[in-house]
Length: 370
Image (cartoon, rainbow, N blue to C red; front, side, top):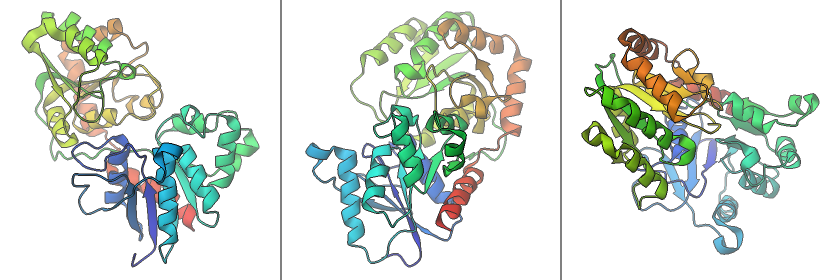
């Protein structure tokens, strides 16, 4: 049993809370848990995981109740509710990550407890948050809504009246990425794309741009890191299309497949340019932060929450397509001074470390609990 007040965090069922193949949500949760300064114990709940979880963090695996009937996420919620009934002490806060319907289910069953929802994506595309009525219910019945960007905060409040907005306990709690480097790194003539290899991330458009540009710059190389999911598996048709697009470049482009975050950071530390070519309304791109934390010259897009971090620190592409990506890449390769300026900005202006970002969610948690 906890020896002091505690906060429970419930992950989406799909998340693997392990440093070797953690998804975006697990990475964010572990960052906040490692850097919190609150006097609360943190307990993290999710699915059973065969490999080791993040070290020095308390992870409790649960088996979803009636998953065929309820689905894995709601089944996990009911399993957690049953678990609560067996505990002598109750949490000061229950923090549900990424699932509107799970937060609603727990809030309805545990009316005396404080339940908060952390939004990693647009709630208007989630079960339990798609309609205005559903989001108004969450605003009225949850103790807090955490949004990882101003863009996502606005998505949640879409359609709310001014009075409803004023009555909604919504908090801007941006994510961070830790800078592990102690001095400005030496850069090689390498371009890195580190992302899930899926259409919304714009990887094929970026690959076509590389095919067009790199033959004119034989001393430059590119490396594409990632897979369809947060692990390697059978190649999707989209991944095959990306590989086909860069095949003519031969040894100028390497496709590594999925790599753990620590290894991705090592690659970024050596790379001169990082390309984050999202073509969808990106909620709050961690890839943007990782590129900046490693002192890369960043090329990215003006989509979703990206400009909140990248404006003034990166080369922003307004219309994300292969032609404009090629133009952006070439503009840095032919202008070393422009490239160096972005290196200097990335290194000297990085306010997104995990400790600083955790202060924001800790302040929100403290306000809700008090």
